[in-house]
Image 1: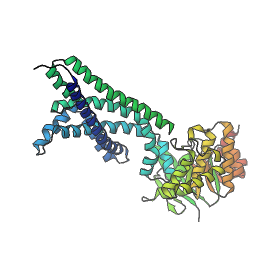
Image 2: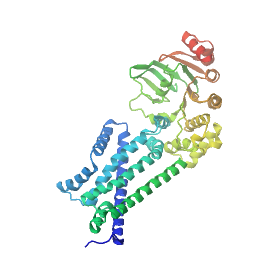
Image 3: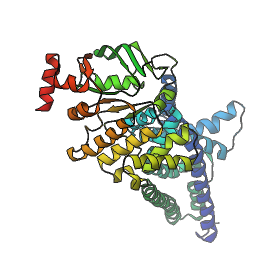
Image 4: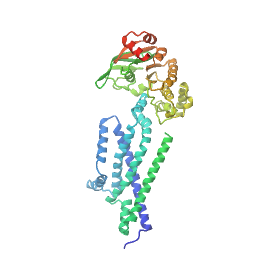
Length: 216
Length: 243
């Protein structure tokens, strides 16, 4: 029985959108924490750690996100760990995000002049004190714009998780479209929802930048 | 016992040997001006004193701490050997007072209120008490450099190292920084300063060291050395910078 695209469908899409948002949030937090570790490993003055971080970044950035999703969803059960699509999606999106965050933040860290490190050293600050009190606060300010830029990509990339059966916005739209045979209004509605999430993020970023600038 | 000792220091950057056997002792309270052409190794020598540069061979002892030891506690040493740089290097994300408070709160475990009091004392000393809440980019170069001096002094170092601290300043701002240096000198601080300000070296320093091609070429009382150079190299250098 074919039905009209109605209120129930809209609310179904909204539920999908909230899963999209939730997944992006998890990837942001998980990927952010892991990314911070990656960025620090990438800049500490100890070559083997730098190499590990570089290898990790290249591996993640050099393979498709879809492949990573499949690896977690279909690969983990092979070693006896059964995962549902939400777990596989959160894990792989977090790892994917961590490589990009790691690189963005490494770039921001390295854009802070060597002289700032030296000024900290000349005062007798230890390496972690120089990093956390002198360099990081300056680097964070620089990293806001590229970080949010990547977050917007991340939100849109969550649509790939529909392929492992995770019902987020894109998958919800497919289902509604299949039930109503009205793909155009359905997908346009879904697109508008993506836009609202991404646009809010960029607005938030601009606000944050102004705020950080005012407070240095 | 001398406060700073350098014994036969050799320092190379790749194939270039910048210091070729520098030996030197500085007593407590001495004010030593280090002069020489660019590339003569004077800044490098200063940076070796607080371990910002590693030496290839030789021994450096500062205030009883062996800087060149493999396990040297450089962070402890640097609390005793303050340094001011040519390019100020204030922390741009912190206010002036917080620039000064940072090391006090992190290393001396002083509470915020006490650190702020010290910061304000130091700022008064360099004549910038009213700028405590300003950010570095709101200050002129001369004012930033005075804050950098205050930041160094706040840690109550036993020796201060000044690396061409007026070279990046507009000419009209040099005077205010030199006046601050002079007042610091009058308080009995041991100072090593790499400088191009010959008049300042002559009037304020006790001793002048002239570096030439990675070695100490002349070393003597400031006035005498600058007014009656013993070697043609120093004579040429002085006539080049004074005219």
